[in-house]
Image (cartoon, rainbow over all chains, first blue to last red; front, side, top):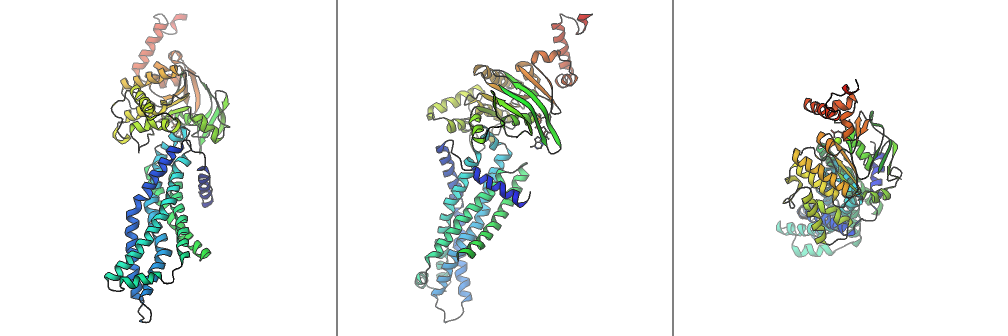
Length: 245
Length: 265
Ligand SMILES: Nc1ncnc2c1ncn2[C@@H]1O[C@H](COP(=O)(O)OP(=O)(O)OP(=O)(O)O)[C@@H](O)[C@H]1O
Ligand SMILES: [Mg+2]
């Protein structure tokens, strides 16, 4: 199948998600379950990554800023801006594409292959809205929250590393954080986070939902879905930067 | 009543169903029989719309299913129960939750009422004490029975069973057949069963369609089948010598102790 067939089918899947729920309570329950799986489930990995990213960027920035003319507080500014603009949204989402994406693709793939999706359809349930929609909605709600958390933890990680390595005292770092702060950066990062959240949930959902064959194909399509979502995230990152900055 | 008109289904080069027409009657066990790979599952899936037939029409009580849109199909499907060949239980849910799921989705009953109904159907399929187990923790035959329980929990108007008793011991098999038969009569359901189990054919075969190479080769009921002179059907049904002998005996009985064919001479 070529790109356009996939893309058309993907759009049709998204269109098919919008229908009146057969039972609002069960849909809500499924949504909450997915929020838990996607949001709480990837809290640990998102936190660890962001702390380390902040720490590393503080040390590396200090290493590159050799001129004594540049004040130390600049380190804090650079860490703050790179973490908010790029590391927290993009890097975290790339990692989540692996964590969340493979989970979504293999869960749906397994349900497809073992005819559980057919069983739901036969009961008169719109499986696109019951299975796919709550996953995408949960990702769109929880992933931006993770990204905000990642921003905070990243900046904190830089502060810790800076003071532990004796590069920049905490007070200077804190003061630096407040210098030249552009609130738009945060909005821009959130726009990215929402976009990426949609990408890393809907693309794996598509690959899982339409899997054909057996367990081998589930694995294969879950890998493909992660690769495709990562590339799409990077592409979207570039497009958003070109458009909005 | 489900009317099948000239259904044709092709997968790539392979013609799986080639102009099959038949009527599935209400209040009866309608059996689809045939060798493995003859297209029984495909026919059943065409009936419920999991496969789109390439040609032909399907009517549910006179209403064309083929031309229905998604929403209309959804409504009709709330009256359909289906047991899949591989059971298709939701593996994130326990036995109890599986059976209760259609009730949760489509009824506004209280928890106590639903719980009672779940236990009632689980009892009917002879499955008590496994309520809290997950599908991965029960045997294949038990999964089948949970699948049946889930299919009948809403008292559907149309019941589809794909090999309800493959993988079950003869005793449980018989029990399942009887159960399906009883509820079919009791609730006047239109039941469609795929099977290659001879016991079922003889016990509950009200209306049998025999598929061969995607075509309807023979149709009739369990009484007719003994006297059928269709070579292919005989080879399929009376494959073992034991069954051939049984057939001879039944025919002799019916003929007043003479071998078939002798009566007229
Ligand atoms: N999704 C599919 N894609 C391509 N071919 C298929 C598909 N499903 C079934 N077939 C083909 O259709 C034919 C009939 O299959 P079907 O599953 O209906 O057989 P069956 O009569 O149910 O057999 P069994 O008794 O073993 O269950 C087989 O040759 C099979 O290869
Ligand atoms: Mg089959």
